[in-house]
Image (cartoon, rainbow, N blue to C red; front, top):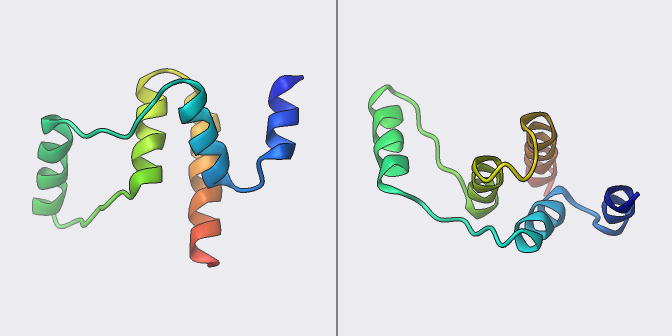
Length: 85
């Protein structure tokens, strides 16, 4: 099982996310629609700012590389790891 071996080799969620992106040629890139959505969110009173890793999560999902459940787990793990630094 290749995925299980990869999971053991990669220690953090960030490393796993970056590894998946590299493996599939995914880069974090923003569109005008992303900027518009950020503006709408900000005007609604929320302040959401994704870092590069979170942008990669969005790009991986858009590309259909990993399903939503797996990316939700990775994102949650990434946020936990980031807050414990």
